[in-house]
Structure formats: C-alpha cells, structure tokens
Image (tube, rainbow, N blue to C red; front, side):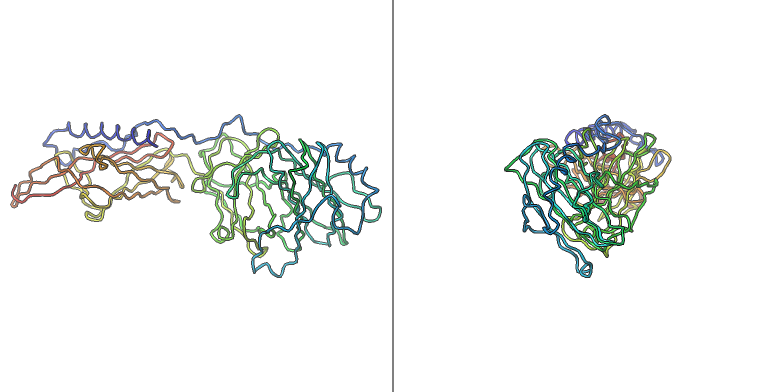
Length: 490
C-alpha cells in the first residue's frame, strides 16, 4: 500500500506540473486530459500459483490394512453395544439446532480414541439407521501435522455379524493446517449415507492411521442421524461435490439446508482459461450468515491437501482449474431453512472512469473555469466524494472490484499530514464506486482575478485525483480546484 500511495503521488505530481505549464489565458474548452490510463506497479497478485492447483481430488480405494483389520475383528463384533470398547463417549459442547428444527428427529454423539500404530484402525459399530434416515460422521484430529487419519464407512450385516468389505464412502484428505476463526486445523474428514431400503440397516465406521500414530493425540468422531434433510444428501466431502456452473452475471441456488452440526455441502467449480475474471464472489444470504453458516473455497494440492483460499469482501482470487466450495455451520442450523448461495465472477477490469464529484459545501455541479481549464471545485475543510465506474474493455460493468482513490495537494509538505487523502471502495453490481474523503484546508497558493461588473480574486490550489482498480494498471486521473477563499474587488 505504501508503494501504491507513493506511485500515485508521483503520478499526480507530474499531472499537476503539466497543468501548471498551461497558458494563463486558457479558454473554457482547454482541459487537461484526464482519461488516459497511467501504469503503476502493484504488489498485489490476483491469482494463485497455477502449478500448485490440482484439477481433481484423487479418490483411492481403501487400503488392504483396513480390510484385513475388519476380518480380524469379525469374531469380536457385538450387536448390542453402540460402540467399541476402545472408543470413549465424549461430552463436549455441540452446535445448537434452530427452534425451527425442533420437530425434526435427530441424534448426535461424539466419541474419542487413539491409534497406537501406523496403519492401525479403530471401529465404531453397529450404528442403526431406520428407513429414510441419513447417517453422517465427522472425524476431527488428531491435531498434529505429523499425523494423517482417514475415515471409512461400511455396511454391517446384522444377520451374519459381518462388516461388508467394500466401503460405501471414504474421506481421504491429506493433513494440511488452515487458519479458521476457531483456530488452525486440517479440514475434517466426513462420510455419509442414506438408508434407501424399506427396513432397518446397520453400519460401521472405521478410523485408519494412514500416516503416523499416537497414544497421546486423540481423534474425535461425531456421528449424527437425521430424518429431515434436503434431497441432495449425502455430499459430505469434496469427493462428492456437485458441479456448480454460473453465468457471467452470477448464479444462485436456494434449495439446500444445513440440517446438523456436522452437515457439509460441497460444490465443484471449474475456472476456464478463457475466463474474463480473476476472482469469484462467494456469498451466503444474510439470514444464513446470522446462523453462523460459512461458504469457503478450497484448492486441492497433491496428496488431497485441501487449502483454504483467503477471502476479501467475499472475493476469492482464482486461476485456471477446479476448486471446491464448502458450506457448513459454526453455530446454528435448521433443516427448515434453505440457504442462498451465490457465485458471481468478479469480472476483469478493463478501464476505470471518474464520472463526477460531490461535496458538503459545493454540491455536484461546481465546475468553474479558471486559467487551468474547467474543473470541479471543492472547498477546503469539507467532505469530498469521488464517483466513478469500472467496466471491462467491452463496457460490461465490473462488480465487487476494489478501487483505491488518492487525492494530492502538493502545496502541503508531507510532514504536515495534509498532502494526501486516500480511501477504498468496492464497486456495486453496476460497476459503480463512491469514495468520500475529508479534505484539509487549502493553502490558497494561486490567486486568480475575475473581472466583471463585480470583481473578485479567488485563491485556490491545483490538486489531483486518481482512482485505480487495485492490483491492475487501470487508473483514471483528474485535476480538481481546492478552494481557499475570495476577496471582493481584489
């Protein structure tokens, strides 16, 4: 930002020197060129590193160690116990259901355990599911960068006491710590299934230590069953993400809900090389925001490492490739509330234009003609609003684009604190931005005599304004008169 302000100040100084070199008897039609884009260096990179983004997650079959562990443990299976003896029931604070969801039948429980050998497996069984019910399970931890545990879901044969050898769902992310509001953590592993049969079924969940093990670092396994959920379930992990296509103007969906504290809805988006945008605006409706719902964007690296991408004003910088959007809750949930998820490209800015000004003392139409041409005039020690629009090269409005505005009066020294004023705004859906600055007094460095039936001498400064789309070379500049005072008959 310091480099940006310095570059803008230098550019405006050059523009003002050019204005000072104009003839003193310039006519009303003599104006300084203000629509020429001036390139400036920027430290901001709009796109992620291309070679780091993997186009697809790698879904591997379950390792032999999980299958062999299942068969070794078959003779020890117990139909009557809700958990294996190696797992401990935890009483921890959980997310809360909204009053709207009070009538929905649901149950949730959290268990903890440890695995002492790499490749080892812990099981939770049997978990009973009535016809039409949904089973979801989430694995959190162990919270160590040196450990990597995976989650598997199996059908359990209640007649024979066998666990079917083929997993019906699996979550196999690599361990990669992201920074969340709740703290640093790797993305949890999630699996799920619906009982589409007309009779009760049972299931088994397996936690496997793919890399490392620890007798001291526990994992936490949460199991949730529910009879109220949306028609797209289950899609608990990015491996089951639904394809989300969106138009240039953006697209929305409002037919899904978060019905439990561990419900994860996943969407896959593809960014083509031919795009005219470098960022995507990912936003939920205000009611869902109030519930604590989150919409996050992830990139997949080698080894299924899920990297949370940063957001600024809901904008996420993207490159060509495939990305994954996760919707979940950090606080409240309701099966009866449909959230609205909107994905809208932040179109690539082709140009920025300053369309007008306003101020608390001068209004929007104060454009006098002094010796330096016809320009807007703003009184000292007043508010000063710069208005403009950002569009693509073919004049399509660019929404959600950050615009930095700088005002410069080089008659003030840098040490005075009055030399520059800066502000930032994001464009609206029509590409329009508005930035209001609080200006210092004018030094009144220029005196211009205006003859007439009643003569005056006006004192003002010649100042400059620049509006730049952040991270680009798209800049609009203009000259503004900074008025000090007038003397009658001077």
